[in-house]
Length: 260
Image: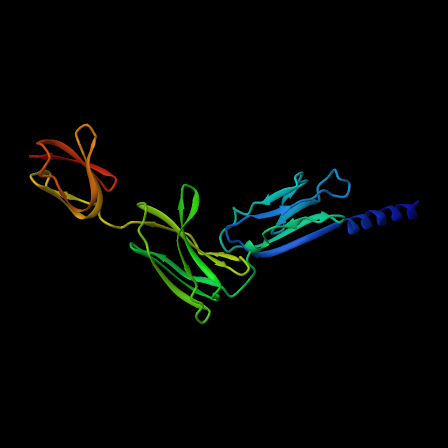
């Protein structure tokens, strides 16, 4: 009886040894999730992947779809990450974009800064095949604002780009992409608020024109809210207006003035 029990235990261990496999990928989190193709197992009823671990913590199991996404969004940028996919041995899932977890390398963003009229960054370990994309976070999406080719000089470079901020509060990051192997790297994201003083104007009782404290987009509205004049500049000629109350829309504020 004891021999039979040992034989059963041995068969059980042999089953797990033969019919289980693992895919392990490691790298650094760069803001992207991992996508996996998940074929049927040999019985044509179940799917290949049994479990998914991220940094030794089980995140998924009993996956019942032909493709799935491994969510890494809870990680912080540049966090080390190791993913283990446990699968049935008679089949094999396919990781579609392992390159988004860049392996340890010499490339890094040394600095990234945003100012009133420009953004600048410096790198080390870059290659001439790199292209940098300045991205702005708008409506829950990262949109490309500008791009520049890498200098590739002595493995690093310093970059400056002029910028016109779209909002009072903005968020930016830089994406570096190797055009040869499509590896992607991201800088940290920076929130930036414009530090300029609010735009003012004078006079409030107008004879011929209004003068703004600095160049800006403006709209002149009637008392009923109709747009009478709009443009961009530091002076707004208004000699043609009839006497009455009007409104000036500047810098996302609406101010009242009187035309004599």
